[in-house]
Amino acid sequence: MKIGIVGGSIAGCSAAILLRKEGHDIRVFERSNKALVGRGGGIGTTPTLMHQIREDGLIKGDFAYFQINKMPFVGKGKTTEPYGRTAWAMPMNFHVFQWNELWKKLRANVPDECYRAGIKIVDARSIEGGKVELTTELDERLHFDLVLFADGYNSMGRGILFPKKKLEYRGYVLWRGLLPESEMKAASPLKDEILRLSYDNEPGHNVVYFIPNENGSIKEGERVFNWAAYVAIPDAELSELMTDRNGKVRFGTLPPGNLTKENEKNLKSFLSKNIPYHYAEVVNKTQDSYIQVIYTLDLDSYRKDRMCLIGDAGIFVPPFTGSGVFKGYNNVKDLVNCLKENSNLEDALNQWSNMQLQSGKRLLALSAQMEKAFIWEQLDFATVNEKTTKEWWKTSITFPETFNYEKG
Ligand SMILES: Cc1cc2nc3c(=O)[nH]c(=O)nc-3n(C[C@H](O)[C@H](O)[C@H](O)COP(=O)(O)OP(=O)(O)OC[C@H]3O[C@@H](n4cnc5c(N)ncnc54)[C@H](O)[C@@H]3O)c2cc1C
Picture (spheres, rainbow, N blue to C red):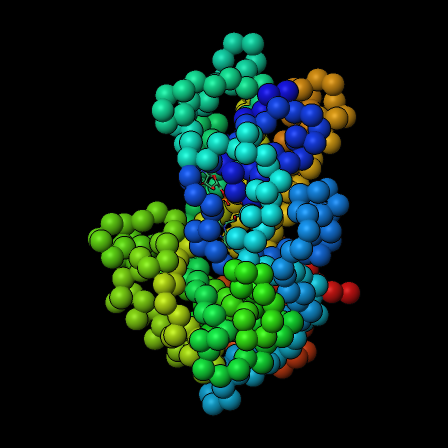
């Protein structure tokens, strides 16, 4: 089949590689004409998924990552201890890496003749003979047997297929930053951990961990400290926070260097009050922090005619589930299998859509559990004991069978 893929990021490149292997004729359209390095922060997934991705040939050669074995739950409280107090360290099995590294490796396996960078798709419609017509910004009209929208959380494709489905703001944002380890004043105790730092009687928490640097170095002293703070922002205050240094209100993300000095100062002071000294110092030293607004979106179908949604264009869940890579890869893997199992395309797409709805809704349910536990009913880890923390985790979070980062 001739398959058009809108979006050449994680899900789009994964789709291109797997579907090419099945003999399909692939064209990826990516609106950005540069290498995708934008936010360049950390991202992670389970070792099982990384293994599958490698087995499938999506990633070849060296790949810089850190193995994570623990998730300590840490609070500041009244203590002056610079690293805070750990209530419990949950055994964990996870890999973290640079987003850029993952994208570069995937992109390297999509031949240039299949990947058109700098081409924005502005419209899509079903036409006669069961085909789909894509319109580019330059008004080219291109015809395909199947189109996959891998165009991210604010998907144009989703808007065309299901115009009534809207992103739902969850009442909090993710404020993120990166600091090279060489710029940290004090050595960090972090090795193979992802830390979750609770705030003092405030909703939300801060996630911190090291990622390899942009050259793939994992050596101590050359790592990059990645922090991501969930901060509650009432609806009425969101547009003020999302107003950039030129006075423009941004939707969804405020890229590095755009947060106003005043808002950055306020956020830094909020975090300094709430997290242990060592981590507050890292946050305060960080320049060019950025903001990602947290939304969710549910769906009743992943397809219409010969158009499908994959990755964040499908059911959309917040980053704390750690499922971004998993979702995109599995959407495509299932599509490949459904196309193989069904000789009729309509049957294949229906079967595929139902499977994606089932797994997407499970991740959405997991995100609702995590949101309650990690944002609105976050324990203060400075005061609770190990038993209470273990019970809180056990009663709050149930992973779907197919996706779990707990160890043992
Ligand atoms: C530049 C960039 C940096 C990121 N950095 C991080 C990070 O550091 N940590 C993290 O956890 N997540 C990051 N993400 C998000 C992460 O990639 C996703 O949450 C997840 O991995 C699923 O990816 P996706 O391919 O479905 O969507 P996305 O990664 O959002 O990709 C969507 C792609 O579609 C393209 N696109 C959108 N509309 C059109 C159109 N009309 N025509 C053509 N192309 C279009 C976009 O330019 C983008 O490349 C980043 C995404 C991007 C695009």
